[in-house]
Amino acid sequence: MKRVAAIHDISGFGKCSLTVAIPILSAAGLEVCPMPTAVLSTHTGGFDGFTYRDLTQDLIPFAEHWQSLGIEFAAIYTGFLGSAEQINIVAEIIDKLAGKDTLIVIDPVMGDYGKLYKIFDKNMSDNMDKLARRADILIPNMTEAAFILKEEYKEAPYTDEYIRHVATSLSDMGPAKIVLTGVGFDEEHLGAVCYDKETGEIKYHFSEKIEGIFHGTGDVFASILLAAVLNNKTLDEATKLAVELTYESIVETQKTKKPTREGVDFEKILPRLIAEVL
Image 1 (spheres, rainbow, N blue to C red):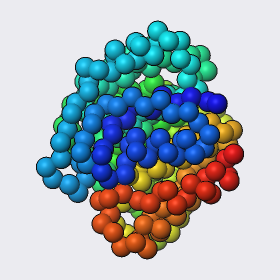
Image 2 (image 1 turned 60 degrees about the vertical axis):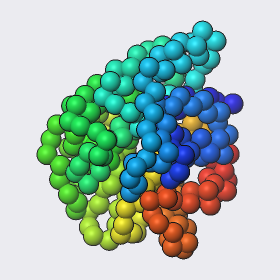
Image 3 (image 1 turned 90 degrees about the vertical axis):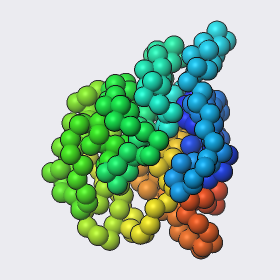
């Protein structure tokens, strides 16, 4: 069984980060070893008054204990980091835990719609490129891509030329594979693009655009993508599956008419994920 070190926060309510990554990766036949970067009562989108426990001081001892046990990981998967300080710490953790064949997957969670999430400051965006350079697969949304490249954020609809510029520029920083989310060429469709530096190929996958903000979908997407890649799907196949299942999760959630801040009902797509990758 392949083992994944998942370095994300954990929120008690509102499906995101580790409460999304653990069940999705586990359903795909992968062993998940969580390393929490912070513990929150709820996620930070759409909630006020949430508690926040920063675990920065615990991360290196956590990793050193794993290192002392000789634990081997097929992948190291990072998402929400609690502070800019954690960027350098996670880079150090990668050095401690990664073997020569360990896949490094970075979801540079910082913001969306052209803005940083409210708990982050400019120090976070100024330094995230240091971690992004370490990735084998980098999975930013278009806001995060702009911050990493230190370019002005542009709103959709995009052009093929612009998307190619963003993908190749990110890859030139180090990552061999780029998956951009939140890509749209018109007002009716939204999806993702994957770029493989080795082949130079760029592939697009879209679904119908559903208006609204759906918290946790980035974590759902990245976790499905990693689950598929570790089960020997190509990056193109994994991106297509992640787009389709994330869309299905949103559709299933809309049927319930519950507040979107509670996260999407990804649990309902797990049977298809299992059927597709196992």
